[in-house]
Image (cartoon, rainbow, N blue to C red; front, top):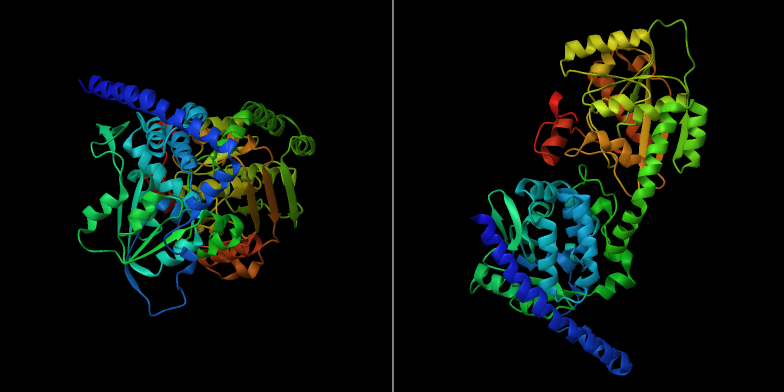
Length: 544
């Protein structure tokens, strides 16, 4: 009985809102647009009047007065804390990362008629396309692991400086609460989030709003605070609703979009000033999916898939020199530098290469740089990745004694590659190094690996790992930088009297300095608990 009820609600909404109201509003927009085109003087005066604000700009806020400490601040995230006034890219991230590429394409197609809809109806349509049928857990994961990266990159530094001067912060937004609450609590230290609530059936979203409807900010503010007035309110200068919202506060300031356009550096938030360091994030998209950027992605996809297959076949089938040549010709940017160790027949053991871990392809690119086959050990590798890997790969069991014996045996057979972080990290940070490798060999060569992409990330915590190499090679011009550092001096190894932990920390610092990264004590477990809600242990039956 649940589905018929939802269907009837949807049919009623489509017939009334989409067909009746939207046609009327579209006609009014077209009429007004034509009227303004015929009257350019009136059009310019209209925009000048619309830009006049009753409240001072946020740039006029007295940040130098250290004696001023406000108790409460209220604002919206869209267009205030974030520089962007459009929320389409964030719905696209939900549709692509929590849904599928087909849902993302449908949302892109909706752009053809969204421009004629008013604010409320536009938001309802995007919510329906992005959320209909998706599980709560998947949306919460995107809100916690994917969206924060794009929110942080889009923060308005002027609004954040006012935000940081208050002790209690509250956000009122017409966006779905589930899209913003995780970021605001984890990174911004918010005290309360009031947003639009969505209708659910069981553990899935229907794509419709709850009975309370779309949030009206000034009404929600009155209900939340009662007769008490917040100290500071921030709003958009171009929104009359925001003017009414912040007029209920003791002091009010507005964010002018012209300020950010004319003085972009002063509005952008530098990475070093982020409220909290961005170390872990998930998702495949490496760019902010605006309508034009998303269209470019879909136009690139057919060629990108063919190019990825070609690049993978080149790496598997051709000799190293030819693979480097054809890979470079196909757009892969390779940079190999450093001290390439010469083979030493006096040593019975092979060389142990200790790499930073950016993608699953780290050992492959190191083998290509050295032009010789290597063996790589890994904790979790899909069967598909194991099949297409051009080098030998061996799985570890997480049993320290057994893994040590396995790696000792492999070293006696030849050179070995290990990534002691245990998992990949996209940002300029190094995770804690496992000390096991330091106990196995005295001939250790650190290798600083770094990768850059522009469209798709070649790593995932919650997605299908066998697609990682394909997504990496689907980028128009992916790049890999392999820097082989000098062999670790004997006095800094276990043979020189150092403990395995001291050796691991020494190599971690050396690699961080070479890359300009920062060392952390975070582990694989920390990453997966944050991004995927598990400890990162992949069962055999789930590797594919």
